[in-house]
Length: 490
Image (cartoon, rainbow, N blue to C red; front, side):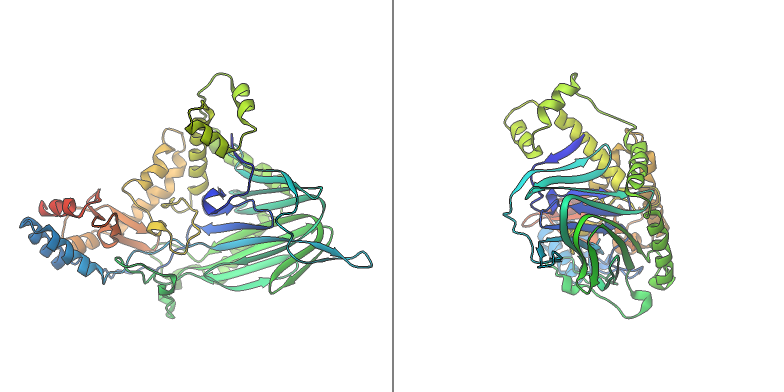
């Protein structure tokens, strides 16, 4: 079972997601400038804090009385005015991007090669294919360019806790490996190794009822208020040619193969721990050294242990909606997924699409939630935006349920562990926030992030020209007037 395309991804949403529950990547399969967009599930803005702003008990009481009097518009304005001053929830942040820039080989009079300019995108490319093998959790691309056949393979291993990327070519090529990211502060490249260090914002600084910009992120100087620190390390090896490290990255010239192994670790030690109580840089480096040691095995050995471990979960269930499996697969195997979806939309019968959807949902769960990781958030573990939609937080009106509903039916109860731990953390925050903010005695449903919690009432979302998404108890309502009538009944 696989996702198959005949063209590179045109945008992030068309890329292939990879993950081991903690570390994620989206791979585009681009020809000249490949990008692996990276995530790590503890990279959030914020630090533990107890100060709540926004809808105070006085404001809630005022809105309640207006609602009881049938003055819904006035009640709405009272809440909106107060929310102008409210800080929104914290934000799930991307680690950054790993770039692989292919460059032309130029030969001098002695036959030596040196990397030159980027190859022309119009250079003849044939037989392009990219695959996401759902049975193995492996992404790959293969194509022929100027007579040279290239294959590229990538996976993120749970046993080895890192990303593995391989390029093979029938002819020599040159490539520049480098990284960037909004919160990466230092980069160091040598001929076979790179280190990236960064700091997440200590607070988002973003407001509830305004259009926010990344410039509003806050980076306090006080250690106890600082955000999560993080480090990424990678090793680069090549077949043939030569490697050079510089401030711009690692340049590999006239090589026939490249392998990259990369690990990411952070200072995060728990939602209730300030930076001064989190892992130190020395401890982070120790964790990375352990990861890179695991990643030092031969490629095939890493691949085999990755597939075996992944299949121990993925292989617990299967779905078949047709009788003649070989015939169906043979008829559709040459069709790009876009072509199959277009034909299906026009009425063509393609029962395998249902099975692919089933397998892809199972794949995403296994890739984004594992014992010991954080719970899968709004986008699993994949996000390329500095300010993602709904901050990629844990929204419990439907998204959390969608992430986890199949854990029981598919015999994947182990994948529930991060969600159970998140719920325990919410209980640990005790009953004071809901009582202080909402003046209710029940424990309401919360939208949260891993550095603390905030009631949904404080992260109002626009849901139309006049409606707002708010919450009371476990119910979410996308209508101001309906919500106010709900408040009236408290």
